[in-house]
Image 1 (cartoon, rainbow, N blue to C red):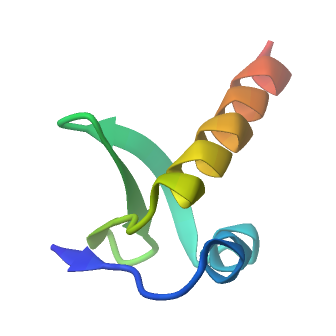
Image 2 (cartoon, rainbow, N blue to C red; image 1 turned 90 degrees about the vertical axis):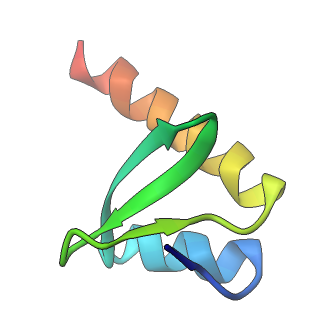
Length: 63
């Protein structure tokens, strides 16, 4: 499984631009599912932290 390279803001920008369309936990790690369904692990705790917040907001807006 590929690991994304770059700093947190770069990676979050990729997510915001829609390069990756899902965020979920697998074995306690945050994983992105790319548009081609290839999974990539996020490299830093900082990115995981922000994505968990974003993911939480998405769940709140679903209600």
